[in-house]
Length: 212
Image 1 (cartoon, rainbow, N blue to C red):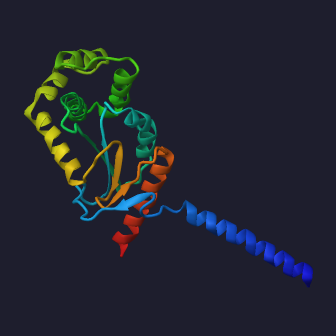
Image 2: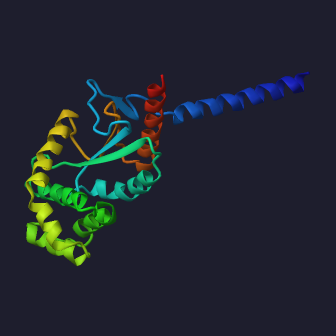
């Protein structure tokens, strides 16, 4: 009987440790994410929206990009990643934001997104004017005429302040920042796999609440 009791206590101890580890792995409000008050309207009707605020000029955004791209490729049909480049009222970053929007408008963002980060941070390409940007894009096989038109268009230029306005509404102070469903801000602790895991948990949280 004593031996059986000892085994039972041992099993209970293991179960308690396992339970504590499971709880620790669960995202915690205030530590892993912040509930936004007020929440913000999303722009992807019928989808659970994950929003990334970023800039090509940010080296942390560059570090996140490969993992984020792989994660986004595996998102279920009811989830949509929307990316918003921000400038924080910096002219060089506003120009970089226009690069993203021009790539998006011309259907080239998925293929060349990572290349912009590489050009800036590894190859030290100086995107100081539109001619340099168009020349870089053309060298990568992008239709230079269409890209130049998109880069200079009123539509693309107007997207930049709108992105900054959205970042201001969320009170974004740094990038990269992930927002889920306009309601939860994922805490950026520099651990990108953990950030994406927290985003996954918040997506499931949003999904369950939609079912109710």
